[in-house]
Structures are given as structure tokens and as C-alpha cells.
Length: 142
Image 1: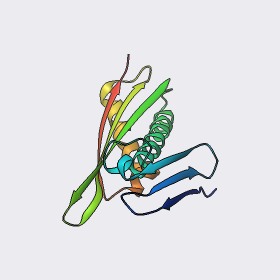
Image 2 (image 1 turned 180 degrees about the horizontal axis):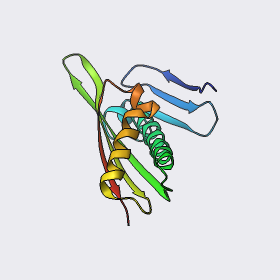
Image 3 (image 1 turned 30 degrees about the horizontal axis):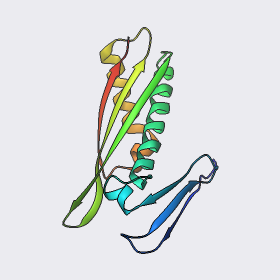
Image 4 (image 1 turned 120 degrees about the vertical axis):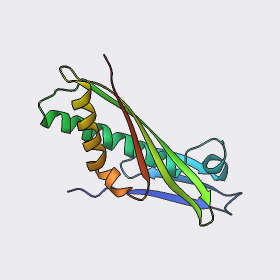
């Protein structure tokens, strides 16, 4: 299996510094800062990239699980909300919300939710993030 790489560089102090993050494939490079991570500043942040990875992984996992059950999904769209919180031990990601909307012909709601929940449990990024509560709201789109 291939190994995937990404890199980051931070220059300066925590609050006044600036950094860049890039995917090894070259598909993305973005700036980040204290403001983009802990407030509403311009740029990206590690949690946003984790969210993109989780949304992408779950969408593929759900599509694959539906296919294994004999269903042919037309689309699976997922948005991940990553909750960065500060408590007595510092900052951590305690929760991720996955909002999914899928177009899947010839499947009933109960079967869809069963397959979606299994995909949530088994997608590689969900398994990586077992320290966070992962909540799923999966909807069929007509």
C-alpha cells in the first residue's frame, strides 16, 4: 500500500507566527496561523484538514459498503465538523459531526442507515480518530 505524506512549517512564536501546510501530492498548499486556528482568521488549520480527510474517507467507505450490499449510489456528499475544545488538559478534538446526504436508488431508509453506521465505524479515518466521539446524521436524498 502507498504511504501518504504531508508537511508543515511554522515560523515564529505561537501567537504571532505563521505557517504553511502542504500535501505531498502537491494538490493543496495553504497558510495557517494562530488566528485561523483558534479564532476566525484567514487560512486553514489542522482541524479543517482532518475534517476534509474524514469526510472524504467516509464518503468512499459508504459508497463501497453500499456497493457490497448490491446498491449503486449515485452520490455521497459528506460535511465534517471538527470540534476543537479547550479543557483543563489543553486543546483537543473531542467530537466530529458527519453530515451526509446520499442518492441511492432502491434502498429503504433503515437499510441505508444501517450501512452508513457500519461505514462510519469502519472507515480508516474513523478508526484512526477513536479518541473523538463521531456522530453521524445520514440522509437519503430523493
